[in-house]
Length: 164
Image (cartoon, rainbow, N blue to C red; front, side, top):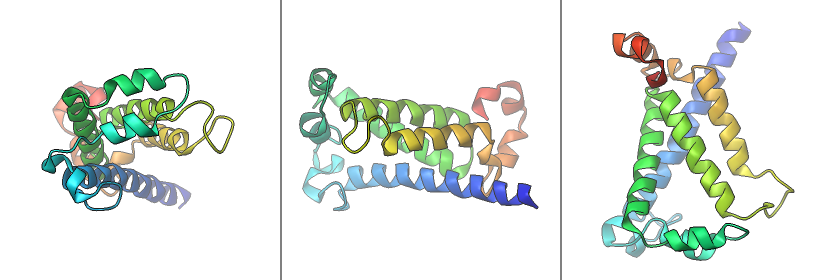
């Protein structure tokens, strides 16, 4: 009984994290007026990373992050990362790879916001999301409320476990 509850929580956590990444992708792509206005949308010629990299970065790594602002390759990598993590977590396939990609993205964002974080000596939401991603990977969360069971049983995934 407890195992089924844990599986349900893992599946819901995975879906929730997937929707967070997908929403960020579509908001930056289309300018849905949450974090991104329509005129600053990627499809309208805006840069999905330059505002944050120019004005939201603080701390010891600020100069490095400022130097990345406005570089098209950085925009593409960021948007492809958001999309890949969002799709992999939402569908329950490529959860290990999607989770690892998400962890790397979150670590980079954590470093960009300045150390220590604004409201705590070392923890902010990025660290919590990283821990959640780790739980999703270790808990094989793709198997619950998604296509993970079918995906995990393919010969490709059985041969190359990193794609689980």
